[in-house]
Image 1 (cartoon, rainbow, N blue to C red):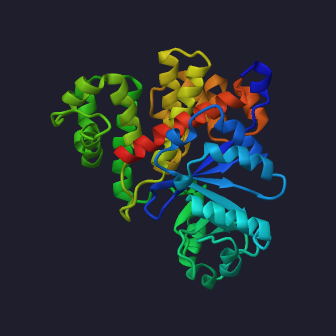
Image 2: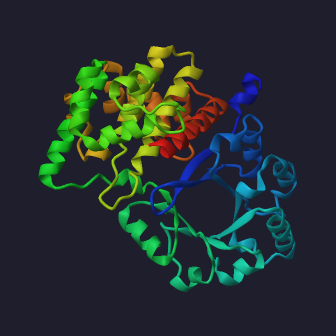
Image 3: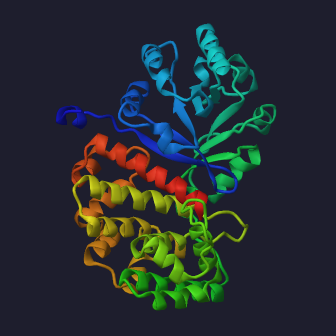
Length: 394
C-alpha cells in the first residue's frame, strides 16, 4: 500500500462485547463508511485470525441499497459461523432484504435486528433471533425480547445502572464504557491494605526490583500469587513440568515477560460477585496497542516496554478508586510515563490519548501521534489478539 493510499485508509474501530461474567464473546465493528471501509480493513490483515475465537458483529445499513455491490465483494472475506450482521429494523419489511437474509441464514450467518421498530414481528421478517438495544435511548418492553432466543445485544451502556436496566430486560451481551466508570468497592480497612500492597508492587516493578523483593508483596497477596502461578502453568506457555515458585517463573518466562504479566495481574482480582474484572482486557488492549504503535514507529525494546507500562497503568485510577496524581506520587516512574499518565504529554501521551479515544479515533489524535489509518488498524488488531489471550489465561 502506497503512502497516499495509507493516508486515505478508513478509520475502522473495534469494541468488545462481553457476557454477564465480563468474558468477551464478540467484537463489534465500527466503520464510518460501512461496508466499503470494512472491505479495505479486511484486505490488509487476517481479521478473523486476530480476533479468534470471538464472533464478529458487522453493521450493514441496507443490503439492497448502497451496500449491495460492496457486500458481494465483502462476503468472501467473512467466516459465516463467526459473523453476525447488525441490520436496522427499518429495512426488514423489504422483500429483497428478506430474501438476502434467508440466504445469509442458510449460509450460517446470524442477524441482530437493531433500531426503532425492532421486535418479534420485524425480526421474523428477516429470521433474526436477537435484537440490538441502544442503552442510551428509549428501552423496549420486556415482551419484545422474551419471545426471541437471543443473545440480545445492548450497547452504549454508560454505567452500572444502565447495565442493570438492560440486564433486567433480558440482554446478555453488553458493550459500552460501563467498566471505565466502575471502581472496585471494598471495606475501608480492606481497601487501604489492598492499595498499599498494590502500590508497593507497582513501585518495585517500576524500578526493576529483584526477585526477592517482588516476592514480598506477592506472598502477602494470595490472589495475585495464585493468578501468577495459574498463568505460567496455563496452556499459553506449554511448560511440561508444573511451575511452583516465582524463581521458576522468572527463569522460564524471562524477567521482561514476567514483569509485563505482573502488571496485568494487578487487574486479575475477581470482583465481590465472583465476576472477572472487566478492566483486565481493557488494560491489556491499551498496553498492547501502545507497544505495537511504538514498534511500528521504530521504537526500540526499551521504548516499547515504557509504552506497554503506560497503557497498563492508565487504568489504575479506576482500578484503585484514586486520583492519578496520588498514584504517581507513590511510584518511581520514568518521567515520560508520568507525563503521559498525568497530562497526556510527549510521544507516550499522544499514543495513550489515541489508545483511549474510543471506537473511532478522531483524525486529530492520529495526526498528533504521527500514526496513519492503516498503522492504527494493524496495532488495534494486534492489541485485541493479545487481550483475548490474556483474558483466557489469567
